[in-house]
Length: 472
Image (cartoon, rainbow, N blue to C red):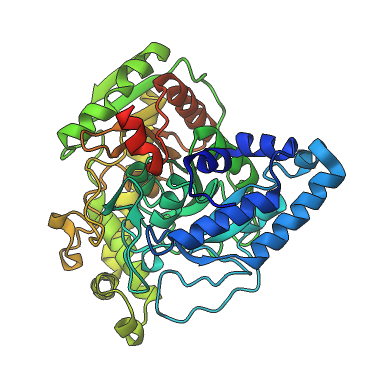
């Protein structure tokens, strides 16, 4: 069976509940499902380049075991393994035992003996890893361009970027090449590609999902991407929980003092948002107002923390990239690491002080508002070969992430934030809306996003169906 027809894609690229129901009814075998997905990935690798490696025999072996479990236990098989038979792509920054973890780099990387805890939890829940999704080298840019191969293309417009650095993960979900993808987000790397590719991407509160090995900059979060908020939420329930190897993974949910239908929302318009994106994102305003006590359009309630972000990220790159290895690395990453080697200790401390000041400031803001809402990204996707819009594309200028003003502040604060698609621009490109909550208020963010998703009634068509849908 192949995924070349629209009917096959509709049948096999559904969400978790749709797929599980097909498997429960035995209208579909896990082996059929996985073989079809693997075939589609293999056929498409030269097109989107969402994947850098495919699981192949290991995935089929896992699928056969899943079919045996279902045959033995029937519907009870999903009680202990809620993702049984669900296909997952894993970003190539995250360790997997059965597949190489190259981190988007030409530098040699040892194959780890164990899965990262998040991957192990997905497998324990019955999910089947079908491949490793493309990323920029060590996730340094918010694009998916690297020296290891062609850039990842946006399924909606192949000449444009899928975003990054979880661009392969977002493109894979958008194209129906997996049901869930596991990404990382250090400055917007889940939410940016989710917005560009028309899928849902969630960055939970810092520490909710263990990040192993931990990142020294304490900016990176693990999180899921999927085609719906419900699927993202289901994945989080599997992924969350502390782990001994991540000392920051002691997440505790905050007390849910408000319900999703009774909120104070601060709507932020970031400078530089293009008119088309602003118009589409504002479609959510009246829908939010229908369910919330107050929606208030506000100025950006904090100073831009970009200088602090640059120093923290550059220092981390300098620590992780020996100068002897620079000849094999992306020029942009090298430029940032070289800048980082020149940062003195006092500058690092000032950057950390700015991080603390931002956390304090947003702590006060979140006493006034239950949620913040805004366009996830203020621009349409740029060219597929670029690392950023033209004005920020020279890494030596240290502006390589400056265009993502709505995403990186919430990595510095560790707040939960989700991007969900809310419409298309006049060029037919997806626009994401970001909801941000206070630390620990993940469930409120997810519940509000789910209601907003339902009320907007916008569910992007799979890219190969988009032209048909616009003609009808």
